Length: 377
Length: 61
Image 1 (tube, helix red, strand yellow):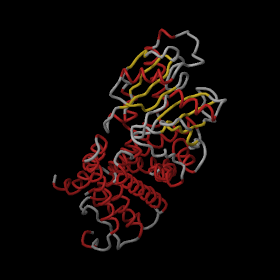
Image 2 (image 1 turned 180 degrees about the horizontal axis):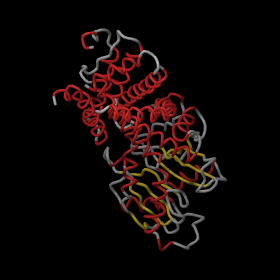
Image 3 (image 1 turned 120 degrees about the vertical axis):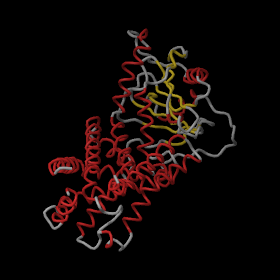
Image 4 (image 1 turned 45 degrees about the horizontal axis):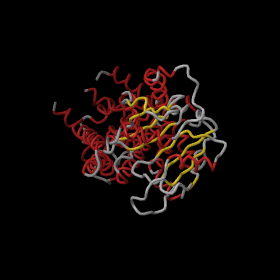
């Protein structure tokens, strides 16, 4: 590598890192507890737990579930009904002032076997809510999300340029060698290189999937306004459904169409995941992989008949597959702990990078120069 | 070539093992989960071993 190219890569690494480090630190610190959001929810007592009933207890209809939720919030309308993967004992009903509401949403957890309202999980308060909002969009809505996505792209630039710079610093040295007998800055330079290179794959994957996640609203909007709009062309011009028919009938018909799948969530007419005339019934498969994917079945909300059952576009599939790779929730608690460890490693890489930059005029400079001279030879 | 293996060999192994762990853990449960744990355990283990050990650095300077 010529001195000139080396300078160019150093410049890229320095500025891509400097521009993003503070935000990436915020993401790492808020992301750490989010890795354990289920466990923390259980510990804080905010996670709803259904009473134990004999297995095979019959389920009540979804219309009764909706009635129970509606009794809690008579002024609100249904937006979404969902179940957690692997737990069909609770329905989570999300309600708003209108199907398209984005603020002041309420949720009611309803027992799927008794139809009793179990709890009202808080959607817009609590520690985990604050951490999640900071992590997702810095409380700055769609633009905050896209801004963090851009910071993620800078992180990827910093990672690639960092790998290029790994070579001149580590040439002719043994892997994992940390010069602890020199100044602290030299030690931290070596640790920065070591921790950066071992966490490389994970950091790229979590960074890239995080960036993809910031485009979720755009992907869903595109699906709704293009593919779905084409499928539902003959509904164009009809007035929106104001009093949707039986949810139970709609869901039963959707399930009959795709008998091998289970329910992920149901979107009411007028929400982002449906049309003005349809229930969007989103089904998922039963294996580890297909359980991550959703298959939308659109059911006419007035008649309860299935209008279309079509595989989602690959963009939505890619988005859904990228989510577990960002959340680290696909391999049980051991994987969550490894996710947390790699998150901490990334915090150390970010912190040591900042520390090295702050001390760039100090003695570390001569060491860097010597390392680079040796590499140039 | 030799220099480049000594430089990139271990980073490459760790990168590939991590990638296998991520993909493997995602496609299935049970045995696949173990692949995920081992795959990501390797980078964490390497970070801990080389990052936390004391001494023995003098010879490699």
